[in-house]
Structures are given as C-alpha cells and as structure tokens.
Length: 120
Image (cartoon, rainbow, N blue to C red; front, side, top):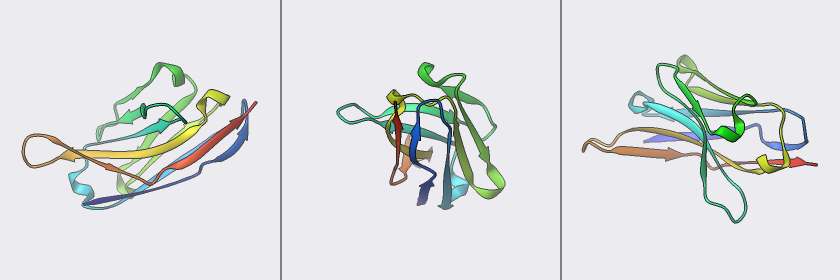
C-alpha cells in the first residue's frame, strides 16, 4: 500500500502562484510514475501533469508553460509549482502514484485532495 498526503492548496488571486506538495509513504518501492490530477465542480477529473521515476514529464496543454512538476525520489516527494494561475485552474487537486498490480496491470493510489481556488 502507498499513502499520499497533499499540502499547499489555498486561495490566490489570478496571476499568482502556489506550490503543491505530495508526500508518499508505505510501499514506495512499488511506485513508477507520479502525477497531479484535478477535478472542478461538475467536471470529470483530468490529468494535469505526470513525472516518471526517470524524470520525464508531461502536461495537459492548458497548463504548459505555467505549471512545473518535479520529484524528489530520495524524499518520496512530488511537487507542482503553479504560476500564472487563472480562475479556470480552480479545482480540487489530487496527487496520484501508480505502479504494477502484480497481474500485468496498473494500480493507482490517490491522496485526499487539496483545494485550489483562483479569484479573478
């Protein structure tokens, strides 16, 4: 089992910045990739950014150039630096970790979520 705990959400004005942190514990040796997802009211959860154990990253188009995902493998932490925030970034942000499920598939782990609210 892997436990994920997020921190760093809050209320910020448009154009501002926030940094989200996610601490992983438990069976961290089983983790391959980590990432951040978000879910706005009335919308489906969407991928925001992912990072592999080797450091490769990928972002949803709407945050490219504004958000940066990074990972400290030694401390089992993943960060999401969010700059140039827009009201449409308002959502609950969830930390995700994934690894093999032992049967050839993928197992996902989720944090409890942290609210990010961007005022106009």
